Length: 363
Image 1 (tube, rainbow, N blue to C red):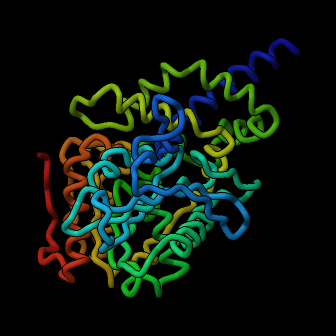
Image 2 (image 1 turned 135 degrees about the horizontal axis):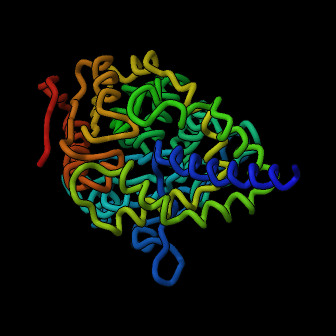
């Protein structure tokens, strides 16, 4: 009898670890990437880059990076990049390389690792909620935003974070935050379409068991998880990217970000993702310039989520990226960066997008 219980527990741990890996694909973020010498990412080594730590209102330390214009000129706009669930700041690799090089306008970037991700501290039990992420973004803005206009860019759960801030501080949007980009994100009903809902449900018994076991024996769960690295990488390619060919290094980077996120963080955020419903909060964004962008091969937050958000924001620019998956910011980086460049230029020039019809691009 005892041996059967051990086998059952072992099978449950393995299955739950795989479940955790699948759930990790909901959103992506990047820890600060390492240089060959292990000290950081090439962006971190820029002459006009500065690392700092911002304390959240509950004391969790948030790792922040500010990157000034490459030519050393005065910034005309600050762009804050907010990553998603189970990733870290490396997911903005290409945007970090391109946006600071602009001179029309000059852009200052602010990136930070969400709580429990990358270099930032882990929250206490119960501190991993989208509501708290919105408050964290508010703290980062207070600590880093200058007098120039602000553009908030969120990928997946990063977009949900922006919506939470809009729910809490609607007065910021328009006067202070001039534009928002919601990339492969969702205003609610995560799991209702795309990846089967049971995988994402906070009521999944495997998920609940994984959360309990991660708190009791985190080392064991991580060991099982690492043992399934090849399976996880194959799942990343299948679920996070679209129908076209994709560089194997991008798949490896994404898998590395996911694997670097603790099981406790993966399970700790699951309930808040399942309960996320902020369509009403989108109303605060109507005074901003808004870009809504998603891939039509996204298996995690399908393009219908982008369409739902755009329906609440009739003046928004809606971009459908043909063949792209959830990691559109890596997979179709040139297109994404071009759309973000157009967004920040409209902010600086004081113009609004004149065409509210859907933009379709697969190039």
